[in-house]
Length: 416
Ligand code: HEM
Image 1: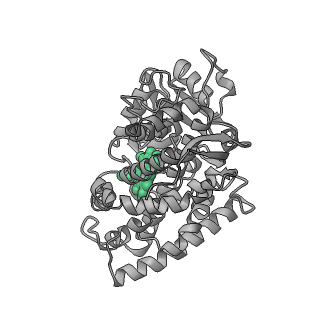
Image 2 (image 1 turned 90 degrees about the vertical axis):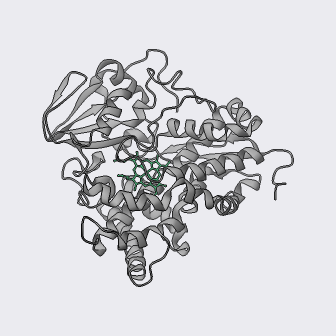
Image 3 (image 1 turned 30 degrees about the vertical axis):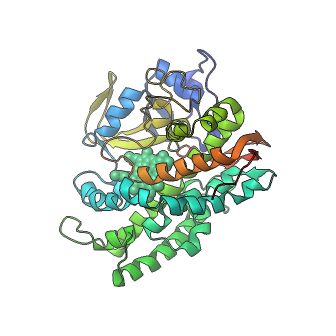
């Protein structure tokens, strides 16, 4: 994931931030750098389809995302639904505005606090070691495929997802978010989405029915019992929120891990730095979050006339805040296209900022920290071993294939 060379720029006419297939070779860093420099608030026209605005500088992205009064989430938060709106709009936490958003967020966030997650760390480590076993065989492994299983280690139990279906979760969630990607497509986009939704909904419906009878210590039990502005959530509302949670976890966390390994395979000296000082694990994770920025953009709809960096935008317009661009803004990050495991400060917005700040942040950080600690203890290098493939998605900065040969360090695996 290299960036533009020097002041390399492209012509504005050539930029298309919508087409998911453009993201199959690499993220659009050259385009975002051009927009930050030349048109930081830029309208993309689409023949026969509604246009949308794009905000690319750090300050403007931050201000926009924090302002839930002027920028609503209820129409949807991803470009794919810009035209018709998201059918879950107003029903799931990320797609709600205040005050209902707070009724759902307050009780849910407690199930995933730093304290709760910290208590689970040893369990996460034990499971993670099993997940990484193929890396110890001495051969080539597809790290992108292995890392898809990270999120369930972190939040499978917290959410209440039966362990028997954890191995299926990556395929079900990824087909839901990238139905056009050849790895996940089941024919047409519609068919792929229907299949993905059916499998997840059938599983969650069973768990919801069970938790209504026997509440447990998990998020689904919190959702079935919570006071939503004076009433309870019905099964459909609980279902939609379960779907949104599992998507939030699975379509993001694995890609921080796989982009990190890809970056270390390209930069052995940076990995040597991490291995030499175990205290760098957490700053390395923060840098990997900035580097990967798994959710490229957040979409919003204006609720009133607004002005961003001197550009006037009317009420009811679609505006995208490009987190991926903000996290490479040269005004905030020195050498933004360098991976610096010891970068400090690192005010990245990979988890967003403001009222919708990711509630899974502590869990994602915990599993990623343990992963870096384990990899750093046992592997001295990751040798590139084939073509890297990127997800066809304008929303998720994912990798669908990352072949590497992990090279064991002398004495590896000797820990208890
Ligand atoms: C590295 C991993 C992750 C990244 C980069 C990430 C990123 C984000 C971002 C950018 C948002 C803001 C969405 C918006 O404002 O429209 C968000 C919200 C959210 N994330 Fe995550 N996420 C991660 C992991 C997780 C995990 C493990 C969960 C677990 C269930 C989760 C659940 C959620 C939920 C429920 C929200 C909505 C919060 C709200 O609207 O108040 N995420 N996440």
